[in-house]
Image (cartoon, rainbow, N blue to C red; front, side):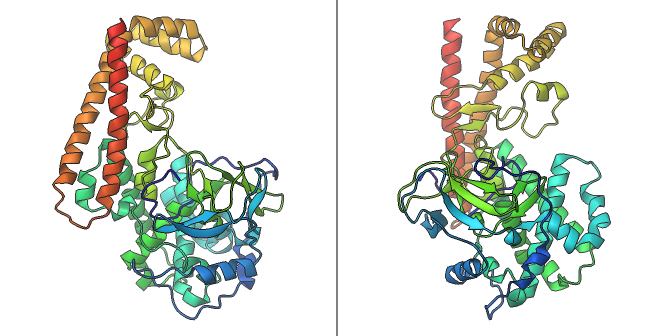
Length: 453
């Protein structure tokens, strides 16, 4: 297993490709959560979410199997002190490890339509004004957030009680970071952390403006509960069919950049988790949470450091508003990368850096380079890259050195650690070391390229 600090068991948020291999489906209708009205909890106590509260695995599995979940080749086992899925027997690629009926899927559209339709205009004022993808995603996640809080309030009466009572209690996401933790973050992950914390504050602002009888004022005002619900959603929800959903039991799959399972759907919306590779008995089962070349996102939003990541975002223009020209050149966080193994620099980084420095050198040349890119004129692009290689290397070296200096400052802060027992800091240090090692390899490559000229 290629993962350190797998604190929560997670399943993603916003950037998934949906499996369509053996179970090809059209766009699905929303599944009404009223389909789960026949689910009855057999538990007798309320949900305890303190960090030391035990997670009830046996009742969760019993609940799941009673309502149609089939653990064909999957069981839950401890992985680095947390839960994770492993295969129960050797099986070939293409075989199914888990089946979850459609009625158990918690979908944002179903929740919105069946339980909170009367709130849609009020919620839209906060999330839909810009009609941007990020705002749309947040609106979907907000409906899941309401659902988790509502089911929490119902306690043993919730049809999802057994699932809720099996969820992690302790998270290591950015909304759990202390101010000192934030100071120990390099600029890009600090930007992501601030973004996540802003989203939580926004959720709380909207929540407190809504009149929802099924969510008590006591629950609304309990920051431990609302942060827990927020973390549940942002670490377990996945994008599917233009909405967000959480799939109980499938959300026990951990992440790896080289996954061996994939979530697929049949025409009725039932979930089939299928092997992408042959596995042996007891082998950990992993899916990808998306954006595998952006380990900073995993640290901030999911609360773990992913050592399986093949690369890291190059940190250029972190958090800045991007122009259409930069986007057309390929400026996306998970493509603007430096590769960890050998310090290779992605083509998009070279393109964006050259375009940026040409703005100061010659704007006519800058436009010529952009036109060549848009027209697929690789020869012109190559000629311009060769001509301006020294300037591009110098600009990248300056950026790399600035980033290495930031990382050194962060490392010094962590070593001075005044917060003994803060178990987020070692995870932050692992992340920062990974980025530093990657940038050092990039620096060596740039020096070699300059020496060749």
